[in-house]
Length: 272
Image 1 (cartoon, rainbow, N blue to C red):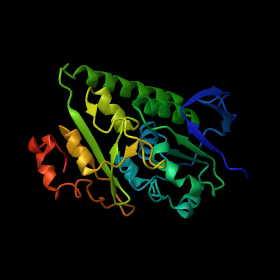
Image 2: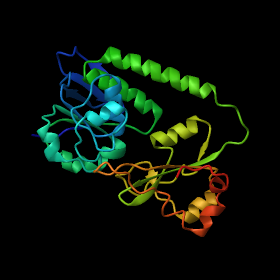
Image 3: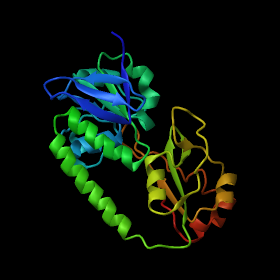
Image 4: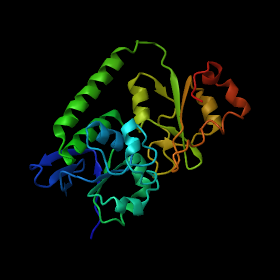
C-alpha cells in the first residue's frame, strides 16, 4: 500500500461526510480522506487541544499534550518526536494527525503504518485557525469547530485591543529544550508569530534553521544571545516521555558569567 502524507495549509472542498473529504493542498494537489474519522490519534499539542476543544477527543495523544485537563485521560502514544508505533496500532486508529513542527521528525516511522496521516501546519495563529476548520470537517463536527473558532478569534481580538501602543518594542527570546539541547523559536513558529502579533520583537527572527526536522527552531550561542540582549526571556520546559518535566533550557545559560548582564535577567523578566 502506497503511503500518503498530506501537508496542510489547505483549502477544503468536497462532498458530504458520507463520502470522502477532498483536501486541496496549497500547491494544488487534491487528496481524499474518509470522514468522519472515529478513532483519531493526535501527534501534536495543537492537534490534541483543538480536538478536545471541539468535542472530538482523540483515542491517543503525545505524552507532552497535558492541556486541557481532559487530555490527561487520553492514552499516551509516546512523544510527538518519537511515537510508539505499537501503542498507536493497538488503538486501531483510522486517521493520524500531527503538526509539521513535531511530527516531521517521525514521518519515517509513521510511513510503516497502514493508516493515513495528515500533517498540519503550525507556524502561525492562522495555521491554528485552519486546523480548527480541518479537524471539524474530518471529525464531522464542523458546527462545533466553527463555534469554538469564532470564540477563539474574539478572544484574540479582545486581547490585542488591550495592548498599548508604544514607541519602544520589547525584545523577546523564546527558548525551549528538546533532545538535550536548547532551541530558540523564530518567526516561523506559532509562539514566534504570536510575539510579533503582540507588537514585540523576536530576537531570533531571520535566523535559518540548522535542522530541517525542526523548522522554525534554531540554536543560538550565548554570544549571540548577549549581542541580542533580550528584554524578556520566555523558557518552556516540555515533559519527557515519562511525563516528568524536561531540563530547563536556561540550565546551560545561567552558570555563564555573561548571563547576569542580560537586560532580561537584570529586570527579572525571564521564566525560570
